[in-house]
Image (cartoon, rainbow, N blue to C red; front, side, top):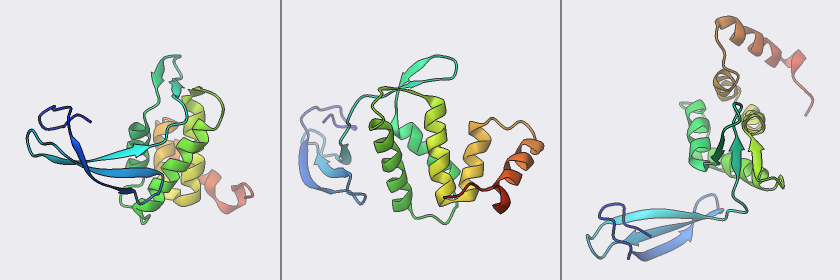
Length: 155
């Protein structure tokens, strides 16, 4: 693992343990060249996923990008970080187990919205406003009116 401080490729693992979500290994590393200490996380990756954007462009799936967008929608919400991590890991596992390496961005968005709806309605609406590209207050009003109990789907 390359040192993020000096670029040395010969770093040493000082400590390994399961991360809090138990789907990753947390490793504390030390660089003998500069003395820097840093943490890495190792996860199982079942397959390399490619996201097919709505304009047809293809890009490698980026778990960090998914995590950033979910965390933005969850900002200042009363949801434990561990629960968010579990949700993200569940979404990634679901995508990897679909059997396809090429996944439309629309599918990813729908899976994320489904997961957010189960955890926090405000985060769900926040994510939907970006995902569905709301342009006016009426878009919010229409979307929120569909969330009312008489419109919610059966679980």
